[in-house]
Image (cartoon, rainbow, N blue to C red; front, side, top):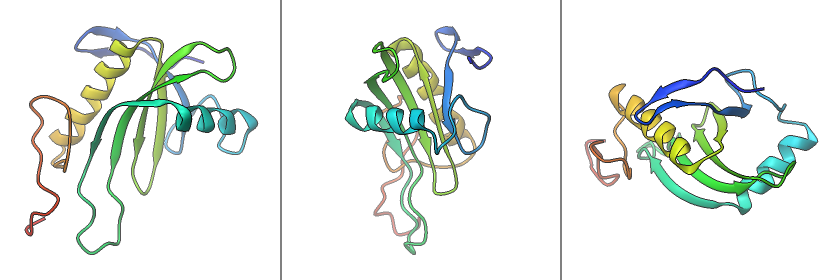
Length: 137
């Protein structure tokens, strides 16, 4: 199952929604496949990473989004996953190429920043950050 293509800075990108707590996905969280994908992603290589500062009161973990190169556990092909995680939700999609995954990642990071969330760290050019030690945050 492929999700509807999305327009990015490099053109139309097709991706698969592997697992999600917010949208319909290929695999349920409690399936053998989700366990295999979770393990493959943990063994993969993180290529890009952005995160928001933790809650100053310590009540909430930061939001994180990253790109991971991994091997698809079902067919052995190289894939590139985007994991978008917050304390309340998790969305994992993947693309066939690194360029597509990074374009989608950058679009999602910019969309989050456009909603007013400042990142403690991001590797996306032109996206503002806020030092996580900033006392105003």
